[in-house]
Length: 88
Image (cartoon, rainbow, N blue to C red; front, side, top):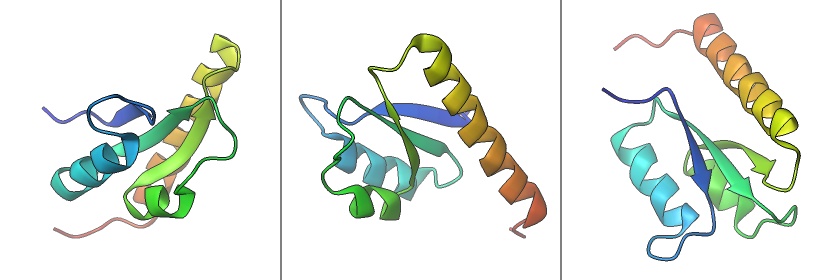
């Protein structure tokens, strides 16, 4: 089963966040991708958006704020899908 959302660490050792986002977006474009970073000045931000990352969350925020932001991003995405359904 495919997850609804993936919180994607953008700073990974083997496959970086951009490569992973591209791979996931090609195989599973319906998954909501949220980039997890500790840097507000994210390199390749436009490219990450083009590869399916919907938004970014700073890992230095308190856990409660991270969870709230993830929920808000997901709810906004679900609302967009419900407003503009895609026929398959």
